[in-house]
Length: 327
Image 1 (cartoon, rainbow, N blue to C red):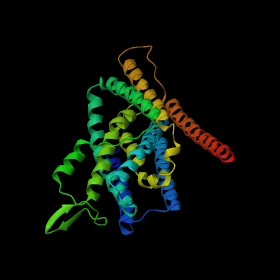
Image 2: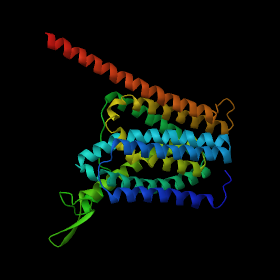
Image 3: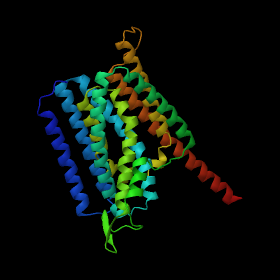
Image 4: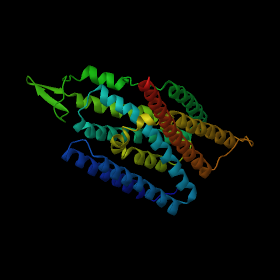
């Protein structure tokens, strides 16, 4: 993409303004948002992402427009999967419901900054070392295999990463929350509260998820601008999505399987394109519109199958209870 010089700063400024407005609204009135409020915000962010993608389609052409939408849908789907762990983190640290919005907001902002740095390093690396695409492809296939096994187990786990362990070790913290404050004074000594620790947990855990998602989107587009904006739009609105579908996550029983298929597909696509670039004529090159169709189709089938499965299980349980009551 041949971008004018002003595009990057204007894009970053626009995204920053949206984050600041969102954070201001949360800080002004900390509480658990209503279902209607979350629905409107998620619809707003999704609408903005679609408008942005249509703008890319209009000004840069169908190829780059398709790459943005494929990357955004993939990143957004992976973000939904991340919400499972966010729920566990909130439960593990017993975060008061009124302050969960603030925790998510700051954690997501931290993740966005860290992902930006990760994307910059990754973009520079893939332009210098073509062999990285083989590594990315193999890693995505391996991740897909792990996700498939994880989906079979039906269990979600949260383990403390190195950054979180260091924070808990070297930052003296109180046992209880002090409202939404990050620090408090106890006996004349300044201590951090669990609020800061859980923000570190959210931000660094999301960065670990980026180890899967960033290679995946580089398998769909090599444009740093599209990689960054797709990630930004996938993360923005994640706070509201957490409250909107928090009660529905258990119903997406096949989500891990669907994401495994998507990641495996992108991994194979990456390896095929790398082989083709290295002169292997028979290696497939999958058009971006076909990739977008496969990704959306897989996720749609996964969602429908999950809802049908849960409905079938509930019906079976109801029939079992009915038979037992008659006996």
